[in-house]
Image (cartoon, rainbow, N blue to C red):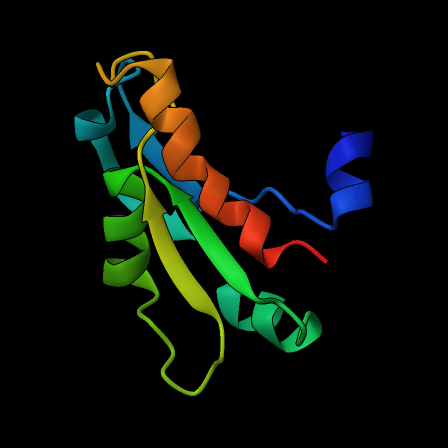
Length: 103
């Protein structure tokens, strides 16, 4: 956690609450999004929002939408879930894009 703080990286789930039986993303129902409007108002220097997989990205688009007035980049990344069959090296390469946003 200390590393993330030093890099000025925050972790926040798209979904504040939901119903889900089991661990599969396909079982997520009745999602309620976190309050991104407040997040963007409070942290005006945000440069990028990175989504851990398609479910997070699609849920954000559906429940929150992309605010065109912001200068924030919204980036869908490969899921880090073990259920994703991509090799770790492939995932790691894709996630390196975050480096471009670090101060």
